[in-house]
Image 1 (cartoon, helix red, strand yellow):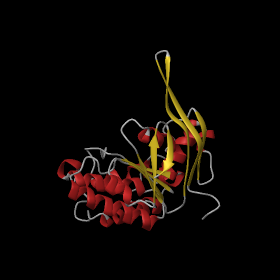
Image 2 (cartoon, one colour; image 1 turned 90 degrees about the horizontal axis):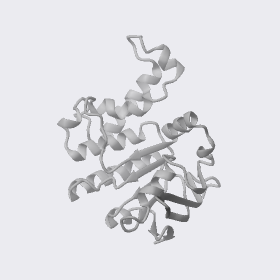
Image 3 (spheres, one colour; image 1 turned 180 degrees about the vertical axis):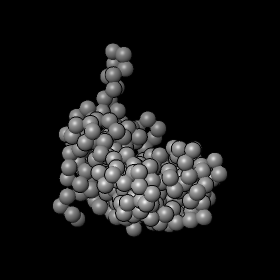
Image 4 (cartoon, one colour; image 1 turned 45 degrees about the vertical axis):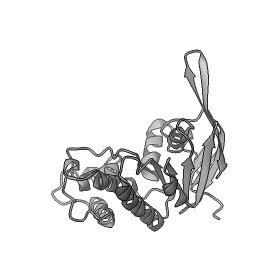
Length: 241
């Protein structure tokens, strides 16, 4: 076990104000995921799975507690640096693919690489020839889409793809920046069983190949059973299942 885990959460709490009431969703959640390890968050609806995933992904801050990603405290960063950290270190796959309809599969997979272009990329923006970083990213996107079985669909837009194919593009997009942490919120929840199994197979294969820590929030116990560990969220706390 590495001394520095890919993800560590310590005594994380999340409270929401609802009128005059305080709703406690998470009450002191602690967890740890090592590099290359997969972890499932399971529990009934309303148990806080998605909330916890959003906190781990730095999409919102906890009320209290600490979260570290590869030994760093991203929540200590000011917003511009936090956004850059999130882009470079965390990949997200949601239940709905959220692809941009006007762009091809290849272009959608590349979108995270465009959020914080390097100085070299900016200098070459008007050039007819792509810079080496641009070419490398494009080649990686092609490789990822080929790995998920979309080599012949690179230039198809979402409307020309099936739901399962769109979700495969979303998996490739999540991994394009080689994040150390991959967070998935019901990644197969909107798919039929056969397609869900295919997408899950690809997700786990790429997770192992990339050695990213994988955290999946899911109601699907078959999907959860494929993870190295399972954590049950119940009444705002979590226990090993």
